[in-house]
Length: 422
Image (cartoon, rainbow, N blue to C red; front, top):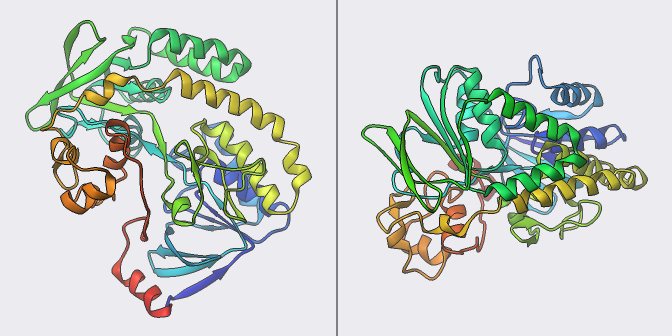
């Protein structure tokens, strides 16, 4: 049997900005609330490192608010399945447990999108967000030449952070064209805080080449990356680097919502005005419903938390603010839409699934994701298709056909315990 059974009125999965806001809103309305996250800190990846002495005012506000709201934090807790309605199966360092809920709020965030190109698996080719996390944890970057490529506002933020830690920034290369990025900047007049933030980043990166309409076509090196080849569609050139930070935006972590039966719309979880999914009493917030950043996630989290706690009037008071951030979110998606050339960067010899060493050429002959998994082991490795599955969606047009537990790598003992019990 499982070691423990925990019971709450409302369970929030994901302790990023959206999950924090949801947990606070629900607990402040008198509900027994649990906030579940597989990391030991609050704030998710975006506020990583802000736990002890938060330097980001927004992080400080919500972390302090959570500490006073009365909710229960379950850190280092990974949700791996749902054996039956109203129950989550989770793993903790001390063993497995069942978390019982009456209302469930999912705030599982997003991950970086990697697209295959020759050399993308070389050591030193790292996602911008992943590199940022490594450096925050002490990974030595000082003196190293770093080229940044891909798409999205994260590129500038990462470059500025790396430069602070002593990296020699080679260049920043955004695949979206200048006219799209400039148009998005004009729309930021409705969000002056975001506009100021972007202007400050640009100022701090003066002297670092920042190009739009440019993307990587290959990386070369020996035991690690040594240079990256870039193109603007008309000309091609090579730049020397020790690290290539390359990522093409974010994709939502929809595995748990799908396992629980939540319907998707355009790759995101479909929700109503209360943030309720297609499954009664399951709410979804933040990047699960659209890539919109921390501010959008926070207001959605508050709406979901209040609605789940039965305070719909309080939730409705936030609708106008949410609408404003949804406009921002739509502008973000439009400005940084991926160009079609990115679909043809990889050759048949390029690895698509780096966990199982499966090339793109090997999977092209299959009819879809399920067929490729069955016959090539593509998506069967440690990441469980989170990297190659998202890439296959862009390159081959394949969608995720099903999700089966465990949604995260787990101990066999945890699976045996739930099987024996049920």
